[in-house]
Length: 68
Image (spheres, rainbow, N blue to C red):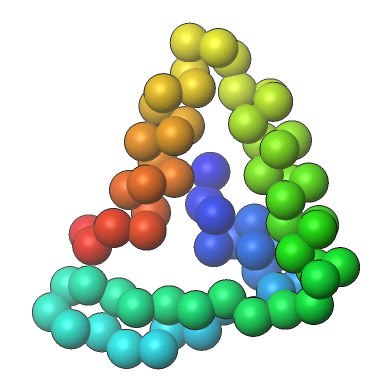
């Protein structure tokens, strides 16, 4: 699950603000409606994950926002 893709698919603008070394700094902008679509997509993605997969999904979410 790529939270940046979920945000973009919900109609939000994902901006690369800067990069220092391998760390990327991003911001996400959008309307309240777009944010609500993002939340619904996130809830749906988490609900579709099996109970056994939930820790893996949460780790992937954290890994996507960490440096590579």
